[in-house]
Length: 381
Image 1 (cartoon, rainbow, N blue to C red):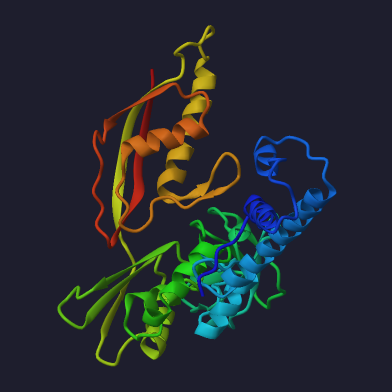
Image 2: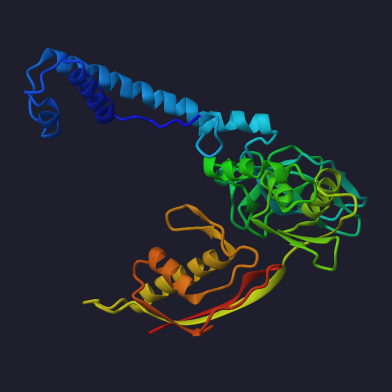
């Protein structure tokens, strides 16, 4: 069916032309010309036609919604979800952030300690995470690292390092908890355009072993910031999956579920965490350009600290000045000094000029690598 929505002007003009042909209104009064000039018309018949045309134009709006609701390219909201149900692809819901927590005994125990998964830990502000693995500390050790996942999905549960300090549940053993690194993952539900991409590729998604099938799987995977699928990385029939951060828990879970649900029987999957690419930064910063009163040494030290923190956020991820989360460099993303300069300009209003002594040009990062901060040297001039 060739459907096209009609607007009020088009409907009204068609009605007037029809009325003129049937002699219901006079040609002498030149109503079409008056209407185009937005002049008043003291004719009840014509005004009645105008009201009817307006009503029809509103009906066309509703017809357009019905027409588009059945098409993946135009459907929105619940209409898109309904199409997804028909195609067997649900909208990816919000994913949860994950972080590695270190549990430490206040004093060594005589025997091995084993606490089942499901222990709730928390930040001072009340953001709660739950352990995904057993907390096991042998008699010879005093601490262990365990994967934990945010109870509330989405961006709101992302945390930076050293924010988890409380164990909510009552445990038999006296432990302290800390997260030495920031959390990863934790994304909001797919919006219509992101979901639409999956539905447009629905035939490929249902084809086992396709890149689209992998994309659909990882769209709902908790605790990762990015991933790379590298086909034929070690010859035909081999696939390398790189997950960021790629904890042991994530790699084992993904490997098992990919083999069961996504891959073809002949595929050989190699799971990997990214290879870190350390980045050293040395820059000279000027904050006194156009300043009537130059900043004091103490003020410059504060500005320097802000710049260093923002560089860490740009590369490793973290919270911006406006409290929104910035993901940092993702897998395979090159480090480009110009982009960092633009980021700093938005974050540090005191910054007037920055010159990168090192690196002078971009740092190339391979698709299975991820850039991380190694050292930052800021010279205030």
